[in-house]
Amino acid sequence: MKKKDLISKWLNFNLSDEELETFNNLDVSSSYHRIDRAAKHFKAPDFDRETSFYRLKKKLGTKRSSRKTNYYVSGIAATLIVAFGLFYFLNNSSDVEYLAANSETTQFILPDNSEVVLNSGSSVSFNQKNWGKERQLNLDGEAYFKVAKGETFTVYTSQGSVSVLGTQFKVNDRKDYFEVSCYEGLVKVIYQGKEQHLSAGKVFKVFDDRFVDETTSASKPAWLDQKSTFKSIPYRFVLQEMERQFDIVISGAGTDNDTLFTGSFNNENLETALQAVTIPLNLSYSINGKNVVLKINQQ
Amino acid sequence: MPTPLFKNVCDEQFFSKLYDQYSKDLHDFIYYKYGEHFDPEDKVHEAFIKLWKNCKRVAPDKAKSFLFTVINNITLNDIKHKKVVLKHQKLKPKEHTHETPQFIMEETEYLEKYEAALAKLPEGQRVAFLLNRVEGKRHKEIAEMLNISRKAVEKRIYTALEKLRQEIDGI
Image: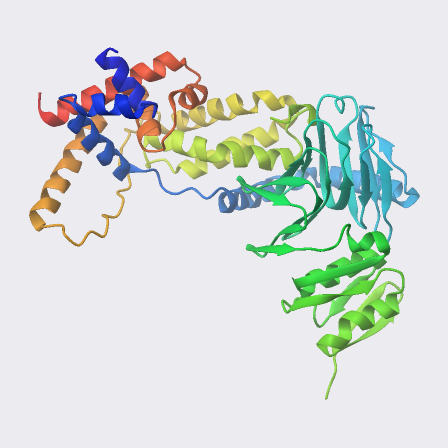
């Protein structure tokens, strides 16, 4: 091999052990190694994608105010459709969206016979035309998937993506909270550019920048049986879930509480559910239509 | 890239995915090309803001080249008359315990020589060389970033290395 080719190969991190030895015997190799070491001293400043994106969002937030009206219009339109609990076709008839409003769940079958159940306050969209080629969909909120065998099946969320071949799993993408539970098979989670594999019974959870690895013995999400269960979750997320399940607004004590809560509540009866989550924290509640106010019990 | 799902880049999820994918490369590209004089993160933001404003007109598979072209133009506009100052951040020295003062002095001297030699490199060679040596990128990746052939990248990096060696060794 010519000297130049050998050097280029070294530069491309491509040398075999044998070639590396030849390279190291070159008269110039020590100079090159030295330069290589020196180069590392001039690294670009660390770049954190996440915080940087956060700063970008702030900038965009101020510049996008003129578009707000559009958002309101589409927001109202979306709410109307939610109210009827129907899925609708967008302008492009191949884009399909399914929604589950607060206090309801929606179940549907994808073109490949994969099953999806949406938990309250969640939506899924995908392109029907391309489904045969690539099984990809967008999720906002929480959903359970029972995927038929076939090509890679990918769920994109605002925080990370999840890919599988054929299996059962659940994805929960909420504000400041991201969770993936695998019930069967193997699931690949990509979160902030990092890849992680989950086997059956494993749970991947992130909230408030904390990563938690857990296991689950359940074979499907509890909410398929009208229950919401939590394992070491900050209390405020529990209340947020309750708001979605019963389509209520909770205010007062506890809404910014970070105490870790383990337990469950029933998704069918508001009173029972409120008792289940307030008694352990020594709180009391009062219901006024769709508003629930929590108070700390005085001893 | 999951293009079929999105008609254009107006989707917020897709947009954030683009950010995840390309922001660091864009940042490093601008840093190694123009130095820290122009806040690279700011340039990254400007490019993405521009992308967002034009999101309806940019097809997903064109987003990457859009970003690289725009960020380069933005920075060029900024520097038009200013001279580039290449001042790289120095890594903190490793916490070796056996370093003699003489060793440290030699090391500092060497780094100064290196810095001077680096500043003399033509921009194209410097960017390719630094992306390769510092960020550990392969020729193919750099070719995709800079939109030039793999062979051209190979040549730039090799030439840069040779020039640095000759400059530093005083040949």
